Image 1: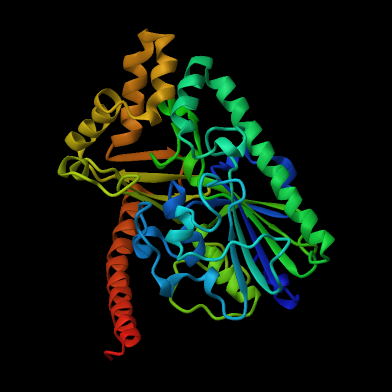
Image 2: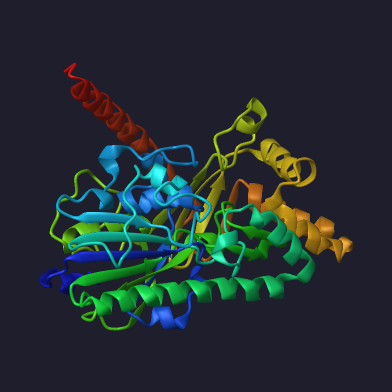
Amino acid sequence: MILNQLKSQDIKNIVIFVCDSLRWDYTPISILDKGISIKTVASSLYTASSFPSIISGLYPPKTGVHTWEDLLPRNIRGILEFNGYNSSLWCETTWTDLPPNESDIHRILGNPKGVSLENIEQPFIYVEDDKGGHCPYGIPSGEYMGGGCPEFFKEYGKKGREELIMQYKKGIKQSIGQFKKRIEILEDKGLIQNTLIIFTSDHGELLGEYGGLTYHNRPPCPELVYVPTVFIHPLLKTNKVNNNIIRHVDFYPTIASIINKKISYKVDGVDLTSESFHSIGLSFRFGGYFKARSKIENWMRYEASSVWDFHGGHIFHELGKFRALSFFFYKILIQKHPRFNFMRENLKKNPSKKYIEYKKALKHLSSPHIRYLEPHFSEYTAKEFINNYLKESLEFRERIRIKNSINKLIKKGNW
């Protein structure tokens, strides 16, 4: 019940600033000290599947969004569908190679309007996807999403991990500058008192850990799953919450409660204004970056589920050992996937470590079960939690499918 004092306030507006690829352990103190800061379990490991979870209050198995080619169903677009509220998805520093409001994340979320914070009218729900710690780190926004990541990691593989980390911090610093501008806009418009600001991230980032892995997307690990959330409002005193977590799926029911709106379906999250912390969070990664385009790619597609508390987590890979080995060596040696550019270039300086580092990376990308840190629950409990959730998800997706079919018939006048 960390936000219960806000229910008595006249909160008209919500600002959610998503600092892309910001991991919990690299969150600047200046941000953590702005409000109530809490370690958060990201619902997935990259933007396409994490953003729909932030918006809907549901984990990816229920949203059905696992790749850039999936779409969030209309009847579960929670935060963006509040009646009487102006909604905006703003992407000023991301997707700069595409026209405004035509990014892939807009398409996945049903093409919400993109209105700047200066121009949006009250009451509003404003969500911003900022470049944050996304590769290429600290590079001007005009070069973002232009194929720069593969060459960036190749270059920094030659420079080394320390240089990579310094550049990552530079990217985060630039994003914090953007966030401070948003606060200044709210102050200039006199909206600070009636606006709840939520600073968070969609997933973390690997910086050469586990044999030289970089980027995000896989595997589920503390560096990718743990992200920050900071709730900021004049009424909220600075407080770093310890020994507890929240989840992306908690945002929708919490925001609905604060602005006195009913949630329109059963969510996976809890209302942080009236309920205790949930001790466990889930994170999923199903399928490739895009849907598999061949039987071989489909056979080797990456699948992992994980369960986390404040202290650590258990992850489970679904490929099986033979498919996992095939996936790893296909990506590393045959396809020479760009995500491994840092690893390849870094090991050229010390080829004697190649076997050790490849073995380490393979373990984290394919082991049937891995325990990270010291979770306060067993492997068996984690597996049971995942199995029960996936079973529940199948039933939920079927109800959504039937409801959507009925809505289409009504719209066509055939009902």
